[in-house]
Amino acid sequence: MIEIDVTRARKKFSVELNFSMETHGITTLFGPSGSGKSTLIDMIAGLLKADRGRISLGDYTLFDSSAGIDLPPERRRLGYVFQDARLFPHMNARANLRYGMRRRPAAEHRIGEDDVIGLLGLDRLLDRRPAQLSGGERQRVAIGRALLVSPELLLMDEPLASLDQPRKNEILPFIRRMPRELGIPVIYVSHALEEVITLSDRVVVLQEGQVRAMGEVEDILSRSDLAPLTGRFWAGAVIRARVTSHDTGYSLTNLDFGGGTLQVPRLDHPEGAEVRIRVRSRDVSLALSAPTDSSVLNAIPAIVQEISPDGAAQADVVLDAGGTRLLARITRKSVDALSLVPGSSVHAMIKAVSVERPSVERSDDHDQS
Image (cartoon, rainbow, N blue to C red):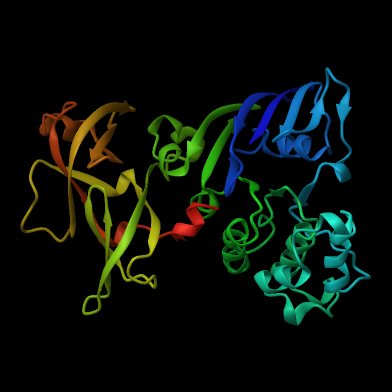
């Protein structure tokens, strides 16, 4: 558990944060630029000092203004991965990794060098200097160096921001595996929604230096009231589902979730794998009965929970599909034509090709990390 109650006031920007959260798995600090994500993580790390307040990790106090406690970064038992790798250019990858080990006494080392090298796939990179590594390889070495501090908590401040999409795709699986395989919780800073969906067990949404919302990813990213922060174009629902079968003839995959079965373009995941998918509200249409002569493959029974106007022409409709939250953005004219009110029974029509590919495979042991 990390507990944070801090204030830092400056002329152009201030933060006032008071919350606590469990730190197992990956927790993402999410919000637009200038929301306070990096300021918060730097205060946790001891790189910035709060004007007042307290920061504790379990029973270990990192900062307490009233008690005069302000541990230097090297005594906070934390690892930190920055946006840029910040490797020592005159050292090869192995020497950079071992520099992290020097940050903690040998008796406190909980993570072995070989474990980190294997986890991050660094075997063939150890004799190379940073100039001989790609951006993704440098960042993997930087992550390894932070892990070899044997931290109680790993802080990652937009570590993929400077990488192109192929390099991001290279590193994301390594980050997903770290909490499960090494037992180190992660606080991850990002303003990229796809990274939030892919990595997070929970998310803290920041806005103008304050916590706007926090909770499980599926709950937070399915809230229509947070669309101004999470992005109206991406507004929708995040659904956890399980791969049940593959239709090889049509190259489709069947996914089961609380509201029924979804058909999506063929996935590489095996049967039984748990995945997250994102269904955008603009890709959901509504019908009063399941059509029998439509090209749309997915017709999910649902109950209207709430209807909120979104401008003069549109409305956001919140749906309950067997306990799973869905969102549909339709015209106000359609709302009236279907006589929709809270409690109406409808079918959520979702084109298979509109369902975004699952962002993360979640095994049982990942959930327990």
